[in-house]
Amino acid sequence: MGRIAVVGAGMAAMAVAARLATGGHEVVVHERAETYGGAVGRYTRDGFAFDTGPGLLVLPAVYRDLFVKTGREPLEECVGLAQVDPAGRHLFADGTGVSLPNASRSGVIGALDAAFGPGGGERWSDVLVRAREVWEGVRRPLLEEPAGDPGPLARDPYPGRRRGLRRRPPYLAEVAADELGGDPRAAALLEWYALAYGLDPRTAPAAAAVLPYLEQSFGLWYVRGGMRALADALHARCRARKVEFRFGSEVAGVEVRGGEVQGLRFTDGSTAAADVVAASVPLPYLPQETLPAATGDPLTGARDEPGRCTVHVALRGSRPAGTAHRTVVHAADRGAALDWVFGRGRAEVPAADALTVGVLRPDDPAGRPDDGHEAVTVTATVPRHATAGARHGAGRDWSADRFADAFAERMLQVAERAVPGLRERELWREVRTPLDVERETGAAGGSVPVPSLPGAGGALLRPPNRTALKGLYFLGGWAHPGGGLPHAGMSAAIVADLVAGGPGGSR
Image (cartoon, rainbow, N blue to C red; front, side):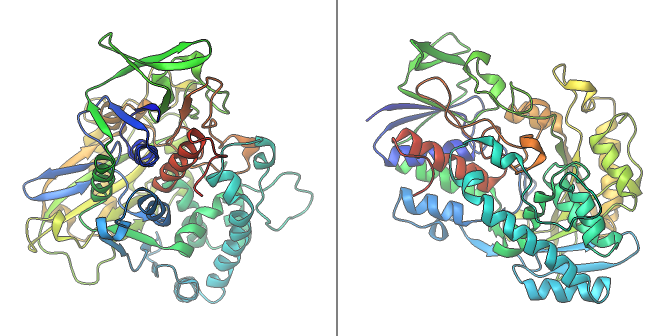
């Protein structure tokens, strides 16, 4: 039995702690904040409750596997899971609206044919068929196994149509333009999946088409009581496996002797011995000499990835029957919208036609004081908070006077297309910017890590989980296989198996 120190108490950290403790190890989790869950938080006020992180779950099989491997009670006995149907409603600038059924290929084809005209659904389906080839080809090396030779994954495996003498694989935006019949609504739909994950579709590899494929093939799920209930269940599983949590325990570095991990040192000057350190915090919190080689920024494995601005709105009046759980309001000027997020010169609040927002309206009594009120969350992908370490002027200053309030007002203006009369119904709002995320989670600039993807010359791959130091492992969004709730669980499975002497991965 070994002494294992886990740095951070987010979802990946708790997942690896539960797996390792089940294997008989002595596991202590060190978290700088005063609670667990990382980005999977909950904001409550006046009987309203809102998820502060992801509001929906893709690939719940990852957490089913985790709960099966760490205890007797399966996931569904610990949390209430429900498929959302429709998976989402999309509103476009020309007034078109379309609701996409959850995990139904034929249903999606029919819905898009009705909204975009005959052939619209089949063209969309053809793109996802090609995305399935990507998934089947890269699933194991990209997500379920330790990072290996990055060479094969540096090439984009998307089998798209080739035109003329193109010498490079297409970007996702080119797939949207070339393979969806020239319909700007269909293009906006495909591009949105990249934008929602913090990727610029104009530079994201065509393999990013795997993102809508995963959602539409495996379904989209809501955790009753909010996504925080999943973090609560995982924390309870850790406690049942005798994992010790030490909150307010801020790590200053790793103790190393003879090329091997000896333990941790903390900002208060104390130390703790450990045979293994599994770190899920953003990598800058560890000494540079301990970091593995990585594409992108060697300190963080990040490439100035954007963050999220979230507005939680408490509304008077009940949620209308038949309301979609998630609605996306697409920008009329997609180019300007992407320029504002990924370009420079972001001093001004973008115009309403240059902003895409997501609107979450869960039908969950746990989120409202009574049926005469409604809790709504509006989100947008935005530039990260500008920090001294941001390269090339990336990001913007979210602490600038009244900018966050003005941007939130613009978000709600756009969201009223999905929630008519939203601002007349408003009781109060809570605005959370990338600066708030940075303060609460320690993520530099409040960036949200994107998932690993093949292609782009390997630029979207993450640092490996195993490091050059014996006993030091990385996991979570800033390490292989990247950001997202499923990826957190996958990275934990890889690291737990590596620590146990296996090849890595869930077996």
